[in-house]
Length: 359
Image (cartoon, rainbow, N blue to C red):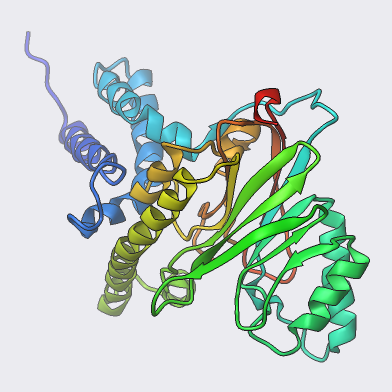
């Protein structure tokens, strides 16, 4: 008895196989160094879409009782570690200990005022936002420190949001606001770049913690992404050229970011204290850079939240590029994202405690 396969089902099988090959290829970015072959890193951008499509095919084959469902299952299992780095399924802690630290990180996007809003009113509005975060330590990237008006904003936050200890200097874009004393502040900005990291020791009631406030190389694709998503037409060559340019910029920026990350990881490895890294990494959980950090640090989102946890509010959907990454001395209790009206990023917050042996 011959089993006939309709042309439609044959096309679906071929499409499924091509999707499987592409999906397996998206598992390569975490293991191929961008300096070796940067185009591989761009595959991480389409990984979540590939997983979703593989899942849809799996459901389709399951309902048809077709053995092709096992191809989908095997493909997803092969990338399970990568999938679970991108999508959190951890329950929130219901009974956190009393002795905790609340850490926040925010890309302030230079804290731009609304049109017509005077500076004192704006400064008070920002201070009220910081106070509402109810955090012990706030790491800020793209702070307003390149402006001579920055000291007035710092003063408003210090006085009205109860952050007596601040590191912020005119000409630098990274700042730390803390309820506890700061020491050994070391700002390091990468050569010929506007990015860098700021490390400092925080004297918390639980013990000394070394924090790293990080802002890595930008991708410079936001404008193109907005154009593609709002006015782009996939039938036009110009749209595909913009998409090609976006992927190219991301890949080349990835090379720069990875070198920056290696410098930061070297500094982290030399810390005599428990480490908490946070900031705008400008990269996604399917990247080589993210996995390099995860070899040494936890991800607060994965340990205390659920879902994709996107932090960028632009038109590119689902991008999680802002992180809080404590080392193994910390126990993560919860994690949340909070909207910021002054920025194109969401703030990320986590409640955590130090292990007794680390104090």
